[in-house]
Length: 400
Length: 125
Ligand SMILES: Cc1ncc(COP(=O)(O)O)c(C=O)c1O
Image 1: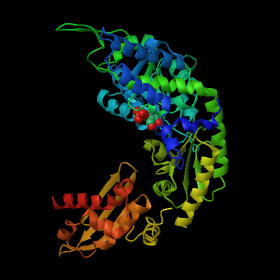
Image 2: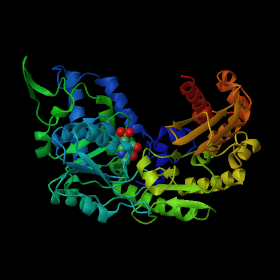
Image 3: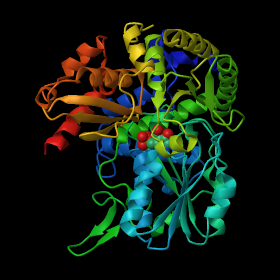
Image 4: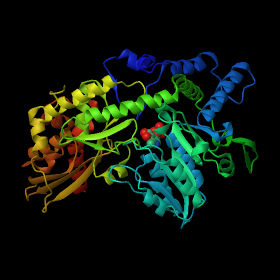
């Protein structure tokens, strides 16, 4: 399938041809087949799952569980290792609350200064509650992780190493396999935040050898309000559930409860069935284009954008600007605040993000208050970048 | 493009902010953040014995709208009494800015007023 024609699959983009959408790092556009799959659930089998003996409930359960298998296979996991959550934030909080309950003073959790707040604040706050220490791996001036510091910080006191696979602020790709190995060397578990990488890379959790991997559906063409947590079955089995309620139990007496088997132990309450099914359709969609084609297209486009935008006077880029920066370009124009750039681009129908990108410690480490962020997806084109280039020159004219 | 929003006087106040800088002798200071954008504003006020604003200053960083708003407000309130300051409204700030502010930028525009109001509240306690 040719990738060029594929803006037409996205109703919002097809309906507004003047719109240049460059904020897929915040949320990606939703293709028609995903919308159809969700609608079809409500139209034909809108029932609760895992309970009904009647036919529409069985059909809903079948679709929900088939989706689980599909997504598990997509990342190289087993079905019982794939837990549905409301998104990456929920997955990270589930891990933080469940894993930290056994931590004590003297234990350490190692994260990085590059994290989205959702992989920073939970650990920071639980450290205050449980008395363990949180440490953060620093970054280089060009926005990569300082790997020497990583090797030094990850010590026998470390119980958890948690880091982003790909920075949402700069697009830096981190050496996940290497970091997981550093964690395992000291007997710690490794958590990988795949919220950004899942849309842009071929993820194989077994090859990466992470212990946990989290992501959101809405950054990979799926709907909002659904996401996943992958965990090694051996670890999940021994973990305390985070939410208690229906569906996650096998037997309840007045004094005690036996928890359900994996993955249901971690899925309390009626799940987000329609959105899970929609996420399954998003995986089908990605596979119909081919993840290799997506990667190829985005890699070319990232390089093109860097080359074209370089010609803008007084532009400063953040990030490595080589092959380890992917699908995201973060920059500032001298003397113009990022928000003003974004507001003016909006008047040209160009949607970009401006600010700290929910990564304030990272911005501080880079010595900026914020940046303009362009984030690409497979539906973006060179023409989008050319329009951005011209619009940025106009912004500078207004502020000159 | 939106020359409407970025009129000359807004850009002038952004590039040449009035009353920029901390006061060493102040009656009160207050700092507020715009969590959405990361904009920061710290306002300094010195009030004379007649309860009138004698001197103003501000520190911080942010977009043209939030900075121009702080610059304009710190000019406007000089010579006003504390009681007069307490009657300032959102509309007063919009009038000072004199450009159309959309929903997305309202928080930036109002950061100066929010900082003044919170500072006044603490000062009056
Ligand atoms: C790297 C990273 N981690 C976590 C998240 C949180 O995702 P969500 O808001 O979908 O829970 C994001 C979202 O921007 C992200 O980019």
